[in-house]
Image (cartoon, rainbow, N blue to C red; front, side):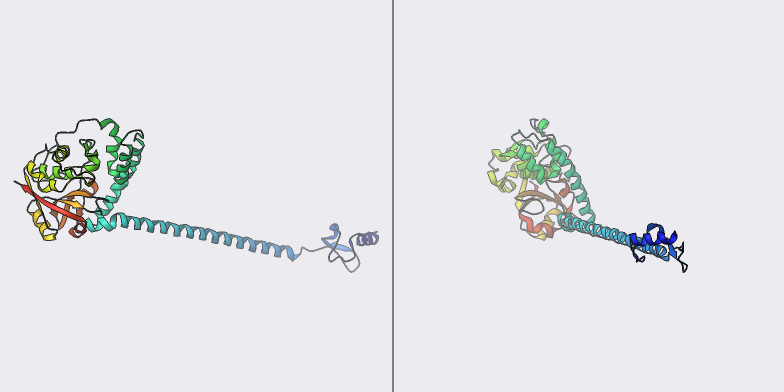
Length: 333
């Protein structure tokens, strides 16, 4: 029976048992007597295990390599971002402010402006788009984020009467006044607000109030005087003659200086503040007036009527000189 069964199987599945066998006989083999006996476990299964283990290890290695490459690419991008930030910081602050007053001053300026920019975004949302000055306020914020509070309070403060005093004035000090101060910045000077056009009157108000120790000389008062006396020159802004002739009506002398380090330092060390008309540069993109108040550690203290941040810095004369278009020193009559 076993022989017949074997023949029938060979007929059905083929005689070459190396390639085709009945499933029931795959774990058996014929001995010399023609009988079947259990086949010993083949080493091939163990070999397959080793092969599978080897493949698994290779896959793990590939995954680790892929993870490493992803991390490397991410690290490269992070380094690139840091370098870009440093270059921006250097261009925006460190390059100009480091020379003006050192690394600490530069970083401090960067942090302050970052805070102002954050608040400026909030103020931008408060602008009434139907107001006639909406575009002016947006432009003011875009150029100077420090004005965020002025812009935010515009709707409730724009009709308020301007202050008739700047507050307490310390003897021997030139006070810092800002053209966009809410106490007078909403008032009109020429064809726009003092906050936009009033750097000249604000600079004069700083000098006059400081030299005379008179808190009643406000930017608004000087702006009205300039308009009435013809010292406002339309698109050109405040006329230079306000610095040499107009200030005499307030009881001080204004003398035009030559642009030299010796003359500037001599005037400041003698207690004479200086008003400078500035070219485009660190302080303006068009034209601007600033006040040089004194010398500290070989650097110049600046009162910028458009910026607390720049006013908090000390500046090298060499940084300021190429930006100065004209300048006047002032003293009491």
